[in-house]
Length: 80
Image (cartoon, rainbow, N blue to C red):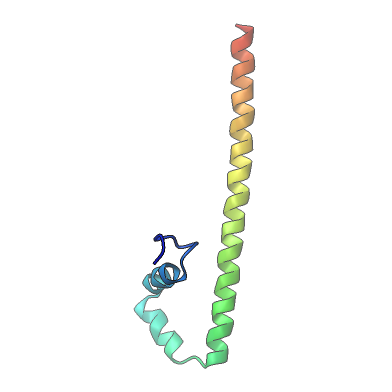
């Protein structure tokens, strides 16, 4: 473990991922072939990447809204 970062340390990411798997998931995964497990892992990775991308987009929009409101407040304060 280099710095306890999920993004920078594969071992940390793996240990976090293990905590996400429920006992029911373990039962389902136990019956999968290697190919099915790989496909499921790839699908989950794509879903995670999509979620992160969507969150980044929302944060960017929110940041733009905050900047616009800040500009409006400063503009209003300058008129006073």
